[in-house]
Length: 472
Image 1 (tube, rainbow, N blue to C red):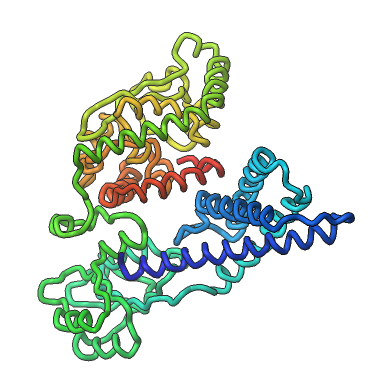
Image 2: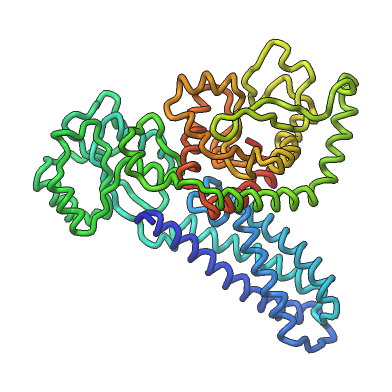
Protein backbone atom coordinates (compact mmCIF):
# COMPACT_ATOMS: atom_id res chain seq x y z
CA UNK A 1 0.00 0.00 0.00
CA UNK A 2 1.34 3.42 -0.96
CA UNK A 3 2.29 6.18 1.48
CA UNK A 4 -0.69 8.36 0.56
CA UNK A 5 -3.14 5.49 0.65
CA UNK A 6 -2.02 4.43 4.13
CA UNK A 7 -2.81 7.89 5.51
CA UNK A 8 -6.21 7.97 3.82
CA UNK A 9 -7.13 4.49 5.02
CA UNK A 10 -5.93 5.33 8.53
CA UNK A 11 -8.01 8.52 8.55
CA UNK A 12 -11.15 6.73 7.30
CA UNK A 13 -10.71 3.87 9.79
CA UNK A 14 -10.13 6.35 12.63
CA UNK A 15 -13.29 8.27 11.76
CA UNK A 16 -15.29 5.03 11.52
CA UNK A 17 -14.07 3.75 14.90
CA UNK A 18 -14.64 7.12 16.58
CA UNK A 19 -18.14 7.38 15.17
CA UNK A 20 -18.92 3.82 16.32
CA UNK A 21 -17.79 4.79 19.84
CA UNK A 22 -19.79 8.05 19.68
CA UNK A 23 -22.97 6.29 18.50
CA UNK A 24 -22.61 3.73 21.30
CA UNK A 25 -22.19 6.45 23.92
CA UNK A 26 -25.15 8.36 22.50
CA UNK A 27 -27.14 5.16 23.04
CA UNK A 28 -26.38 5.39 26.75
CA UNK A 29 -27.28 9.09 26.88
CA UNK A 30 -30.53 8.36 25.03
CA UNK A 31 -31.47 5.76 27.66
CA UNK A 32 -30.97 8.31 30.43
CA UNK A 33 -32.88 10.99 28.52
CA UNK A 34 -35.77 8.65 27.65
CA UNK A 35 -36.17 7.64 31.29
CA UNK A 36 -36.11 11.25 32.51
CA UNK A 37 -38.52 12.65 29.91
CA UNK A 38 -40.92 9.85 29.08
CA UNK A 39 -40.92 7.11 31.73
CA UNK A 40 -43.03 8.63 34.52
CA UNK A 41 -43.44 5.21 36.12
CA UNK A 42 -39.86 4.00 35.71
CA UNK A 43 -39.36 0.30 35.19
CA UNK A 44 -35.86 -1.07 35.69
CA UNK A 45 -34.67 -2.39 32.31
CA UNK A 46 -31.91 -5.04 32.25
CA UNK A 47 -28.67 -3.58 30.95
CA UNK A 48 -28.30 -6.44 28.44
CA UNK A 49 -31.39 -5.23 26.56
CA UNK A 50 -29.79 -1.82 26.03
CA UNK A 51 -26.54 -3.49 24.98
CA UNK A 52 -28.41 -5.43 22.27
CA UNK A 53 -30.15 -2.30 20.99
CA UNK A 54 -27.03 -0.14 21.08
CA UNK A 55 -24.84 -2.80 19.44
CA UNK A 56 -27.35 -3.48 16.67
CA UNK A 57 -28.06 0.19 15.96
CA UNK A 58 -24.37 1.13 15.95
CA UNK A 59 -23.47 -1.74 13.62
CA UNK A 60 -26.28 -0.89 11.19
CA UNK A 61 -25.37 2.82 11.09
CA UNK A 62 -21.73 2.04 10.30
CA UNK A 63 -22.76 -0.35 7.51
CA UNK A 64 -25.30 2.15 6.16
CA UNK A 65 -22.71 4.95 6.30
CA UNK A 66 -20.35 2.76 4.30
CA UNK A 67 -23.08 2.13 1.74
CA UNK A 68 -23.69 5.84 1.17
CA UNK A 69 -19.99 6.66 0.93
CA UNK A 70 -19.47 8.52 4.23
CA UNK A 71 -16.15 6.75 4.78
CA UNK A 72 -14.92 7.26 1.23
CA UNK A 73 -11.50 8.92 1.49
CA UNK A 74 -12.25 11.40 -1.30
CA UNK A 75 -15.96 11.96 -0.94
CA UNK A 76 -16.74 14.72 -3.46
CA UNK A 77 -19.72 16.19 -1.68
CA UNK A 78 -20.80 19.44 -0.03
CA UNK A 79 -21.39 19.53 3.72
CA UNK A 80 -25.12 19.65 2.99
CA UNK A 81 -24.68 16.42 1.04
CA UNK A 82 -22.87 14.86 4.02
CA UNK A 83 -25.80 15.82 6.25
CA UNK A 84 -28.21 14.20 3.81
CA UNK A 85 -26.19 10.98 3.84
CA UNK A 86 -26.17 10.95 7.65
CA UNK A 87 -29.96 11.28 7.66
CA UNK A 88 -30.29 8.41 5.16
CA UNK A 89 -27.91 6.07 7.02
CA UNK A 90 -29.63 6.71 10.38
CA UNK A 91 -33.11 6.33 8.84
CA UNK A 92 -32.21 3.00 7.24
CA UNK A 93 -30.70 1.76 10.51
CA UNK A 94 -33.70 2.94 12.51
CA UNK A 95 -36.12 1.07 10.27
CA UNK A 96 -34.13 -2.19 10.34
CA UNK A 97 -33.60 -1.97 14.11
CA UNK A 98 -37.34 -1.48 14.66
CA UNK A 99 -38.14 -4.52 12.51
CA UNK A 100 -35.56 -6.73 14.23
CA UNK A 101 -36.50 -5.54 17.72
CA UNK A 102 -40.22 -6.11 17.18
CA UNK A 103 -39.60 -9.50 15.59
CA UNK A 104 -36.90 -11.04 17.76
CA UNK A 105 -36.83 -8.83 20.87
CA UNK A 106 -40.57 -8.43 21.39
CA UNK A 107 -40.28 -9.09 25.14
CA UNK A 108 -38.05 -6.10 25.75
CA UNK A 109 -38.96 -3.62 28.50
CA UNK A 110 -37.26 -0.69 26.77
CA UNK A 111 -39.42 2.40 26.36
CA UNK A 112 -41.02 2.94 22.96
CA UNK A 113 -39.50 6.42 23.00
CA UNK A 114 -35.95 5.15 23.39
CA UNK A 115 -35.08 4.34 19.76
CA UNK A 116 -36.54 7.58 18.29
CA UNK A 117 -34.61 9.55 20.92
CA UNK A 118 -31.47 7.56 20.13
CA UNK A 119 -31.84 8.18 16.38
CA UNK A 120 -32.47 11.91 16.78
CA UNK A 121 -29.50 12.41 19.08
CA UNK A 122 -27.30 10.37 16.75
CA UNK A 123 -28.12 12.62 13.79
CA UNK A 124 -27.31 15.78 15.75
CA UNK A 125 -24.07 14.40 17.20
CA UNK A 126 -22.79 12.93 13.91
CA UNK A 127 -23.48 16.16 12.03
CA UNK A 128 -21.62 18.13 14.71
CA UNK A 129 -18.72 15.66 14.65
CA UNK A 130 -18.48 15.78 10.86
CA UNK A 131 -18.51 19.57 10.94
CA UNK A 132 -15.44 19.69 13.16
CA UNK A 133 -13.42 17.05 11.27
CA UNK A 134 -14.36 18.23 7.78
CA UNK A 135 -14.63 21.99 8.14
CA UNK A 136 -11.95 22.56 10.77
CA UNK A 137 -9.50 19.94 9.52
CA UNK A 138 -9.45 17.91 12.73
CA UNK A 139 -8.22 14.30 12.28
CA UNK A 140 -6.28 15.19 9.18
CA UNK A 141 -3.66 12.80 10.62
CA UNK A 142 -0.90 14.76 8.98
CA UNK A 143 -0.78 16.05 5.42
CA UNK A 144 2.12 14.66 3.42
CA UNK A 145 4.26 17.30 1.68
CA UNK A 146 4.84 16.72 -2.03
CA UNK A 147 6.89 18.38 -4.74
CA UNK A 148 6.57 17.60 -8.43
CA UNK A 149 9.66 17.31 -10.63
CA UNK A 150 8.52 18.80 -13.90
CA UNK A 151 6.29 21.70 -14.86
CA UNK A 152 5.49 20.86 -18.47
CA UNK A 153 2.68 19.14 -20.33
CA UNK A 154 2.76 15.90 -18.29
CA UNK A 155 2.78 17.76 -14.98
CA UNK A 156 -0.17 19.89 -16.08
CA UNK A 157 -2.40 16.82 -15.78
CA UNK A 158 -2.27 17.36 -11.99
CA UNK A 159 -3.32 20.99 -12.37
CA UNK A 160 -6.19 20.02 -14.69
CA UNK A 161 -7.43 16.92 -12.87
CA UNK A 162 -6.87 17.93 -9.27
CA UNK A 163 -8.04 21.53 -9.06
CA UNK A 164 -10.33 21.25 -6.04
CA UNK A 165 -9.34 21.02 -2.40
CA UNK A 166 -11.14 17.69 -2.04
CA UNK A 167 -8.96 16.26 -4.85
CA UNK A 168 -5.90 16.87 -2.67
CA UNK A 169 -7.23 15.52 0.57
CA UNK A 170 -4.39 14.14 2.71
CA UNK A 171 -1.50 15.86 0.93
CA UNK A 172 -0.14 19.28 0.00
CA UNK A 173 1.76 20.08 -3.19
CA UNK A 174 4.41 22.65 -2.28
CA UNK A 175 5.16 23.34 -5.92
CA UNK A 176 6.42 22.21 -9.33
CA UNK A 177 10.12 22.20 -10.24
CA UNK A 178 10.69 23.20 -13.92
CA UNK A 179 13.24 20.94 -15.59
CA UNK A 180 15.12 20.88 -18.89
CA UNK A 181 12.97 19.55 -21.70
CA UNK A 182 9.60 20.56 -20.24
CA UNK A 183 6.98 21.91 -22.65
CA UNK A 184 6.31 25.13 -20.76
CA UNK A 185 3.76 26.45 -23.27
CA UNK A 186 1.42 23.54 -22.50
CA UNK A 187 2.63 23.22 -18.93
CA UNK A 188 1.76 24.54 -15.48
CA UNK A 189 -0.12 27.85 -15.61
CA UNK A 190 -1.48 28.63 -12.14
CA UNK A 191 0.35 26.38 -9.69
CA UNK A 192 3.35 27.52 -7.67
CA UNK A 193 6.71 27.01 -9.41
CA UNK A 194 9.85 26.19 -7.43
CA UNK A 195 12.69 27.83 -9.34
CA UNK A 196 15.68 26.04 -7.89
CA UNK A 197 18.82 24.69 -9.57
CA UNK A 198 18.76 20.94 -10.18
CA UNK A 199 21.76 20.27 -7.96
CA UNK A 200 22.51 20.40 -4.25
CA UNK A 201 20.07 23.33 -3.99
CA UNK A 202 17.18 21.00 -4.89
CA UNK A 203 18.41 18.44 -2.37
CA UNK A 204 18.63 21.08 0.34
CA UNK A 205 15.14 22.34 -0.50
CA UNK A 206 13.75 18.81 -0.11
CA UNK A 207 15.46 18.33 3.25
CA UNK A 208 14.69 21.82 4.61
CA UNK A 209 10.97 21.54 3.78
CA UNK A 210 10.69 17.98 5.10
CA UNK A 211 9.28 16.66 1.82
CA UNK A 212 7.52 13.28 2.16
CA UNK A 213 7.14 12.41 -1.51
CA UNK A 214 8.57 13.40 -4.89
CA UNK A 215 6.39 12.95 -7.99
CA UNK A 216 8.23 12.52 -11.30
CA UNK A 217 6.26 14.32 -14.03
CA UNK A 218 8.87 15.78 -16.40
CA UNK A 219 8.26 15.65 -20.15
CA UNK A 220 11.79 14.44 -20.96
CA UNK A 221 13.63 12.15 -18.56
CA UNK A 222 16.70 11.21 -20.55
CA UNK A 223 19.62 13.41 -19.55
CA UNK A 224 17.53 15.78 -17.41
CA UNK A 225 16.28 13.73 -14.47
CA UNK A 226 18.37 14.28 -11.27
CA UNK A 227 18.95 10.56 -10.69
CA UNK A 228 21.63 10.92 -8.00
CA UNK A 229 19.50 13.31 -5.94
CA UNK A 230 16.45 11.06 -6.25
CA UNK A 231 18.57 8.04 -5.30
CA UNK A 232 19.84 9.80 -2.19
CA UNK A 233 16.32 10.95 -1.25
CA UNK A 234 14.98 7.43 -1.66
CA UNK A 235 17.63 6.08 0.70
CA UNK A 236 16.52 8.68 3.23
CA UNK A 237 12.97 7.25 3.14
CA UNK A 238 11.40 9.87 0.87
CA UNK A 239 8.91 8.27 -1.52
CA UNK A 240 9.62 8.74 -5.24
CA UNK A 241 6.53 8.16 -7.38
CA UNK A 242 5.87 8.19 -11.10
CA UNK A 243 3.14 10.57 -12.29
CA UNK A 244 1.01 7.67 -13.58
CA UNK A 245 1.18 5.88 -10.22
CA UNK A 246 0.42 9.12 -8.37
CA UNK A 247 -2.67 9.89 -10.48
CA UNK A 248 -3.83 6.30 -10.26
CA UNK A 249 -3.52 6.34 -6.48
CA UNK A 250 -5.09 9.74 -5.85
CA UNK A 251 -7.83 9.86 -8.51
CA UNK A 252 -8.77 6.18 -8.93
CA UNK A 253 -8.15 6.30 -12.67
CA UNK A 254 -5.35 5.62 -15.14
CA UNK A 255 -4.15 8.43 -17.39
CA UNK A 256 -4.53 6.52 -20.65
CA UNK A 257 -3.12 9.22 -22.93
CA UNK A 258 0.14 9.31 -20.90
CA UNK A 259 0.56 5.54 -20.47
CA UNK A 260 3.51 3.78 -22.05
CA UNK A 261 4.08 0.01 -22.49
CA UNK A 262 7.02 -0.33 -20.09
CA UNK A 263 4.99 1.20 -17.26
CA UNK A 264 2.24 -1.37 -17.83
CA UNK A 265 4.79 -4.23 -17.97
CA UNK A 266 6.53 -3.33 -14.71
CA UNK A 267 3.56 -2.06 -12.69
CA UNK A 268 1.68 -4.12 -10.13
CA UNK A 269 -1.82 -5.42 -10.77
CA UNK A 270 -3.41 -7.06 -13.82
CA UNK A 271 -3.66 -10.34 -11.91
CA UNK A 272 -4.06 -13.46 -14.01
CA UNK A 273 -7.32 -15.38 -14.19
CA UNK A 274 -7.64 -19.11 -13.52
CA UNK A 275 -10.39 -21.71 -13.68
CA UNK A 276 -10.92 -21.89 -9.91
CA UNK A 277 -11.24 -18.12 -9.62
CA UNK A 278 -13.66 -18.05 -12.55
CA UNK A 279 -15.84 -20.71 -10.89
CA UNK A 280 -15.83 -18.88 -7.55
CA UNK A 281 -16.69 -15.59 -9.28
CA UNK A 282 -19.57 -17.22 -11.16
CA UNK A 283 -20.99 -18.79 -7.98
CA UNK A 284 -20.74 -15.45 -6.15
CA UNK A 285 -22.39 -13.62 -9.02
CA UNK A 286 -25.24 -16.15 -9.18
CA UNK A 287 -25.75 -15.81 -5.43
CA UNK A 288 -25.91 -12.02 -5.66
CA UNK A 289 -28.20 -12.20 -8.71
CA UNK A 290 -30.59 -14.52 -6.86
CA UNK A 291 -30.59 -12.24 -3.81
CA UNK A 292 -31.31 -9.15 -5.92
CA UNK A 293 -34.05 -10.98 -7.84
CA UNK A 294 -35.82 -12.02 -4.63
CA UNK A 295 -35.87 -8.38 -3.46
CA UNK A 296 -36.63 -6.61 -6.73
CA UNK A 297 -39.11 -8.87 -8.54
CA UNK A 298 -42.14 -6.79 -7.40
CA UNK A 299 -40.50 -3.65 -8.84
CA UNK A 300 -39.69 -5.51 -12.04
CA UNK A 301 -43.29 -6.69 -12.38
CA UNK A 302 -44.64 -3.18 -11.76
CA UNK A 303 -42.15 -1.73 -14.26
CA UNK A 304 -43.24 -4.26 -16.89
CA UNK A 305 -46.89 -3.27 -16.47
CA UNK A 306 -46.17 0.48 -16.64
CA UNK A 307 -43.99 0.12 -19.74
CA UNK A 308 -46.70 -1.94 -21.44
CA UNK A 309 -49.42 0.64 -20.89
CA UNK A 310 -47.34 3.80 -21.38
CA UNK A 311 -47.47 3.67 -25.17
CA UNK A 312 -49.99 1.66 -27.19
CA UNK A 313 -47.30 1.11 -29.81
CA UNK A 314 -45.32 -0.89 -27.28
CA UNK A 315 -48.07 -3.51 -27.31
CA UNK A 316 -46.68 -4.59 -30.65
CA UNK A 317 -43.19 -5.18 -29.29
CA UNK A 318 -41.58 -6.65 -26.19
CA UNK A 319 -41.27 -4.69 -22.96
CA UNK A 320 -37.69 -5.97 -22.97
CA UNK A 321 -34.97 -4.70 -25.26
CA UNK A 322 -32.20 -6.92 -26.57
CA UNK A 323 -29.05 -5.45 -28.05
CA UNK A 324 -25.71 -6.88 -29.11
CA UNK A 325 -22.78 -5.88 -26.92
CA UNK A 326 -19.10 -6.80 -26.72
CA UNK A 327 -18.17 -9.03 -23.79
CA UNK A 328 -15.17 -10.90 -22.37
CA UNK A 329 -12.27 -11.20 -24.84
CA UNK A 330 -14.30 -9.32 -27.45
CA UNK A 331 -17.01 -11.99 -27.78
CA UNK A 332 -20.45 -10.56 -28.66
CA UNK A 333 -23.59 -11.33 -26.65
CA UNK A 334 -27.13 -9.98 -26.36
CA UNK A 335 -27.80 -7.78 -23.38
CA UNK A 336 -31.38 -7.61 -22.04
CA UNK A 337 -32.91 -4.50 -20.46
CA UNK A 338 -36.31 -2.97 -19.83
CA UNK A 339 -37.31 -0.89 -22.83
CA UNK A 340 -36.66 2.75 -21.96
CA UNK A 341 -36.80 4.25 -25.48
CA UNK A 342 -39.51 4.43 -28.09
CA UNK A 343 -39.70 1.32 -30.24
CA UNK A 344 -38.45 3.23 -33.33
CA UNK A 345 -35.59 4.97 -31.50
CA UNK A 346 -32.92 3.62 -33.86
CA UNK A 347 -34.71 3.69 -37.18
CA UNK A 348 -31.86 5.90 -38.48
CA UNK A 349 -29.10 3.67 -37.11
CA UNK A 350 -27.08 3.38 -33.90
CA UNK A 351 -26.56 6.61 -31.98
CA UNK A 352 -24.85 7.58 -28.74
CA UNK A 353 -27.26 7.84 -25.83
CA UNK A 354 -27.27 11.23 -24.09
CA UNK A 355 -28.40 12.38 -20.65
CA UNK A 356 -31.47 14.21 -22.06
CA UNK A 357 -32.14 11.91 -24.98
CA UNK A 358 -35.44 12.74 -26.74
CA UNK A 359 -35.83 9.06 -27.63
CA UNK A 360 -36.29 8.12 -23.97
CA UNK A 361 -39.89 7.60 -22.80
CA UNK A 362 -41.29 9.18 -19.63
CA UNK A 363 -41.07 5.97 -17.65
CA UNK A 364 -37.73 5.31 -19.33
CA UNK A 365 -36.27 8.47 -17.80
CA UNK A 366 -37.31 7.33 -14.32
CA UNK A 367 -36.11 3.74 -14.57
CA UNK A 368 -32.78 4.88 -16.03
CA UNK A 369 -32.26 7.36 -13.21
CA UNK A 370 -32.67 4.62 -10.61
CA UNK A 371 -31.04 1.82 -12.67
CA UNK A 372 -34.28 -0.18 -12.81
CA UNK A 373 -33.95 -0.65 -16.58
CA UNK A 374 -30.83 -2.77 -15.98
CA UNK A 375 -32.42 -5.30 -13.61
CA UNK A 376 -33.23 -7.82 -16.41
CA UNK A 377 -29.47 -8.15 -16.95
CA UNK A 378 -29.60 -10.52 -14.00
CA UNK A 379 -30.39 -13.09 -16.70
CA UNK A 380 -27.08 -12.26 -18.42
CA UNK A 381 -25.34 -12.87 -15.08
CA UNK A 382 -26.96 -16.30 -14.74
CA UNK A 383 -25.83 -17.14 -18.30
CA UNK A 384 -22.25 -16.21 -17.38
CA UNK A 385 -22.06 -13.41 -19.96
CA UNK A 386 -21.81 -10.65 -17.35
CA UNK A 387 -20.69 -10.10 -13.77
CA UNK A 388 -22.25 -7.84 -11.20
CA UNK A 389 -19.14 -5.65 -11.29
CA UNK A 390 -17.16 -4.76 -14.39
CA UNK A 391 -16.88 -2.27 -17.26
CA UNK A 392 -20.19 -1.53 -18.96
CA UNK A 393 -20.46 -3.49 -22.24
CA UNK A 394 -20.42 -1.34 -25.36
CA UNK A 395 -22.02 -1.87 -28.78
CA UNK A 396 -19.86 -3.45 -31.53
CA UNK A 397 -20.35 -0.45 -33.84
CA UNK A 398 -18.93 1.89 -31.22
CA UNK A 399 -16.18 -0.50 -30.10
CA UNK A 400 -14.87 -0.69 -33.66
CA UNK A 401 -14.61 3.10 -33.73
CA UNK A 402 -13.22 3.48 -30.20
CA UNK A 403 -10.47 0.89 -30.68
CA UNK A 404 -9.12 2.99 -33.56
CA UNK A 405 -9.28 6.30 -31.72
CA UNK A 406 -8.45 5.45 -28.10
CA UNK A 407 -5.22 3.69 -27.05
CA UNK A 408 -5.60 0.56 -24.86
CA UNK A 409 -9.38 0.53 -25.36
CA UNK A 410 -9.48 -3.19 -26.14
CA UNK A 411 -7.89 -3.98 -22.77
CA UNK A 412 -11.20 -3.26 -21.01
CA UNK A 413 -12.46 -6.53 -22.51
CA UNK A 414 -9.97 -8.54 -20.44
CA UNK A 415 -12.67 -8.94 -17.78
CA UNK A 416 -16.38 -9.69 -17.99
CA UNK A 417 -18.63 -6.65 -18.39
CA UNK A 418 -20.79 -5.76 -15.40
CA UNK A 419 -24.09 -4.29 -14.28
CA UNK A 420 -22.22 -1.78 -12.14
CA UNK A 421 -18.69 -0.49 -12.53
CA UNK A 422 -15.98 1.84 -11.28
CA UNK A 423 -16.49 4.18 -14.24
CA UNK A 424 -20.23 4.49 -13.61
CA UNK A 425 -19.52 5.63 -10.06
CA UNK A 426 -16.93 8.20 -11.06
CA UNK A 427 -18.00 9.60 -14.42
CA UNK A 428 -21.35 10.85 -15.83
CA UNK A 429 -23.22 9.29 -18.71
CA UNK A 430 -20.90 9.01 -21.74
CA UNK A 431 -22.09 10.17 -25.14
CA UNK A 432 -18.95 10.67 -27.24
CA UNK A 433 -15.46 9.42 -27.97
CA UNK A 434 -14.10 11.93 -25.44
CA UNK A 435 -16.42 10.57 -22.75
CA UNK A 436 -15.40 7.02 -23.61
CA UNK A 437 -11.75 7.99 -23.11
CA UNK A 438 -12.54 9.39 -19.66
CA UNK A 439 -14.52 6.28 -18.71
CA UNK A 440 -11.71 4.05 -19.98
CA UNK A 441 -9.37 5.62 -17.39
CA UNK A 442 -11.60 4.21 -14.65
CA UNK A 443 -12.29 0.93 -16.46
CA UNK A 444 -8.57 0.19 -16.79
CA UNK A 445 -8.09 1.06 -13.13
CA UNK A 446 -10.67 -1.63 -12.34
CA UNK A 447 -9.06 -4.16 -14.71
CA UNK A 448 -5.71 -3.56 -13.04
CA UNK A 449 -6.95 -3.66 -9.43
CA UNK A 450 -9.77 -6.18 -9.80
CA UNK A 451 -10.37 -7.90 -6.46
CA UNK A 452 -13.17 -9.11 -4.23
CA UNK A 453 -12.73 -6.13 -1.89
CA UNK A 454 -12.90 -3.62 -4.75
CA UNK A 455 -16.08 -5.35 -6.00
CA UNK A 456 -17.62 -5.02 -2.53
CA UNK A 457 -16.67 -1.32 -2.42
CA UNK A 458 -18.31 -0.72 -5.82
CA UNK A 459 -21.45 -2.61 -4.75
CA UNK A 460 -21.71 -0.51 -1.60
CA UNK A 461 -21.15 2.72 -3.53
CA UNK A 462 -23.76 1.64 -6.11
CA UNK A 463 -26.34 1.62 -3.31
CA UNK A 464 -25.57 5.32 -2.91
CA UNK A 465 -26.22 5.91 -6.62
CA UNK A 466 -29.59 4.18 -6.40
CA UNK A 467 -30.62 5.88 -3.13
CA UNK A 468 -29.84 9.38 -4.39
CA UNK A 469 -30.93 8.81 -7.98
CA UNK A 470 -27.51 9.59 -9.42
CA UNK A 471 -27.88 7.28 -12.40
CA UNK A 472 -24.87 7.24 -14.71
